[in-house]
Length: 351
Length: 274
Image 1 (spheres, each protein chain N blue to C red):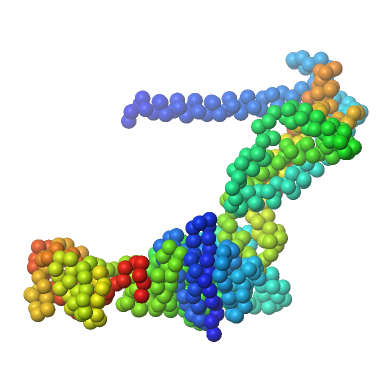
Image 2: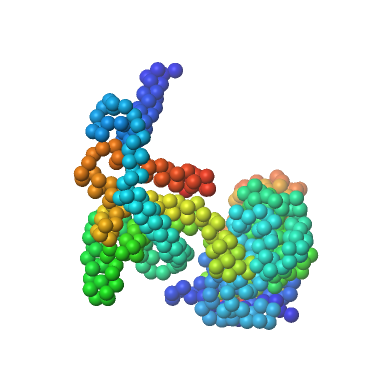
């Protein structure tokens, strides 16, 4: 069953539509990520689900009940904020107990449930601390415990990791994922960080200018992006402009590529940097390219290539062997497997 | 080692310290002088004093004007503070949290009592109250409610300024978190917002009280015949006499306000308030 359904949800600020007829469904236990640049409407969407922002039109339905016009305190939704938003004047215990006290649970039940929630986020010994006596990572874990202890119908996370430093971010990210799996709670996370989105989401919703650009698993979005916007937002990309016909694409500079799928009518194709095949000598189905720049990144080496016709290409290859001795100015062979050439619709006409 | 530079630095520091202490002195010396004067035994103020006594303080107890004035001022200040806070708190919440056109204009309008000279406010309110009385038969001028209402006007800019300053520093996400956890508006206000802006609330109450307690100009127009607030009693006394009684009254006033500051400091820490 669907935990949450958004039906043509829209938010207007004056003439500007921050969120424009957005429809999507979150399945029970699913981890959905709203991904997009700032101002794309992802946070407004989350705030409409939580009830902090009133929807202009459309419907929010949680577990089958229409909550579009319900105030936040009647929605039973757990929210974790970017800056933790803990109650600074209350102890960790009282922070976590807050939602249970509002629900008038008996004191004994509050004690056990708070203890269990703090156990989940590994903060058993911290109940008496004040938030300001804890590190950022610990505070965010308190915030997660506080949101989970009320057994919400859905968990909303608004850029929950962006206030943490890089190392901590990875740690809390893994914990969050494990916790979500363990509890099987439907979750929506908002982020502009593609790594975070890819690593956490079962499905990703890429948003742009208030609209959904594409919905899919991380693999689908990476392998088969619906638009140039999605491709450039997720992973690194080479975009080649030109024209396609049948299984053949010819770049503006006359580079001919064979494609696995027909590319009739496409004006742009995408080639992921790691799909480019490099060879020290020019083999069959290869063209010659001059190495412009080499960046050694440890496990992989990044090579910027100038093709004879004028096309420019970034290639990423596993380091080692002849690649460790590659130098700018050198001629190498470049081949593109037909299945790695992906036709892209223009940003206006999505698949 | 450049001796010239070191001399310059030392001179600069000395000049800075000197300016600070001179400023303090300018503010404190007259007050200390009043404290000292209140214990002089001679009736005509002169230096050095003939001797010291507590007779002016004893004399105060016999002066009904001062005693009544003190209690009236105190009552009016407490009422004006409470009402000022009660109307300023919701106004501040809306002004800080709300998004609507004219926000700035309303905020500036509410600051107006600070800008308009108090004597003008007093005169204007007196005329207004009289007109209201003519039309409605409600006797506002010379009534306690009229006086308190006028003092509420005085307290509003201070309450609004201090409360909005505190509310701006309060992350709205904290209140949203409370809402998402199941707290209704009033519960959020009582359990989250008020505890977090407590220093601002105490500061607002303190400033409102002091401003009302010490106000002369507005009260002058609005007190009932025969009734006086403490500042009016002091003024009236000064018109006839210039003996240390005034110094004794002023000292008491300093003590009352000082006690307010002390209690505030104990409750929330003055450094956090101002």
